[in-house]
Length: 341
Image 1: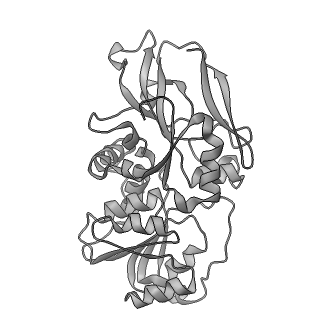
Image 2: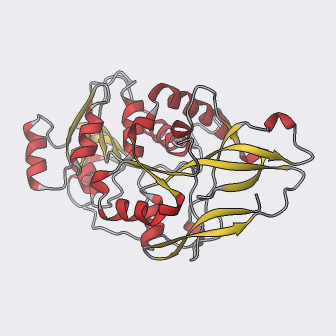
Image 3: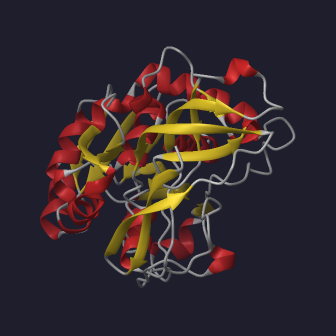
């Protein structure tokens, strides 16, 4: 195989699949044939729409710097099809995960690959980056026995976070999202109470009628991707509560009301990003330990049930148009590269 099909973002709202040459395999590399790769409906849509910050603020997985044309993505699952001279041949035919842009073939060093447990399908393994993010969010929030917890946003990260939180002995766990499909999906998670998004007046009325008043929640996760949702998080978080902000807003801005109840409430705003370990945990935790937790969580939750659409890599334009124009219809969208998916 001398050519790979690789997805490039070329201008705002334009993508292109290009034939890219594969360089000769180095002695310490393996060749991986991609089975499937997952689109990040949050981060990648910022890239697709041209709303991403520049260079130093970029996501760690950017392959060529944040400028067009840009190969971007970080959730590839495939099978090793060739090994370099210095690589143990036991790697041949092994199923692996890699933080790679969307491409049909890629070369990588083995230290950049994650062997996939035999108990997981390729589709489940595609959720590894988002599951690691969810693990990091829950660790940063540090829920306590009997707490009241709210999760704003039930995209993939929100659903994974709610699933992990449902394993804790909380007083109650409430989720909210603007899209009915996501609310219905969230409501199927054990112990979750799923309500309308809080931004609209009618939704807030329904929220109050359900018994959840202002200043109710000890711990709130803002995972909607909308900066204005921070005001909802502040409104519903109790005195001395915590708000974990896991959304990446890119260039999006919104006015945040810090002059009202927030000023007297001693609410803690926690910035949470998966590229690092919380300083409070870094003496005992590292990325390897956190990945172990994420793999085990994938085995318990099996999130492939949230894959709503599968597109051939050649249909990439349709996939991003769907997520951009009709996000209410989709949760997780995958690219497929052969007949396995």
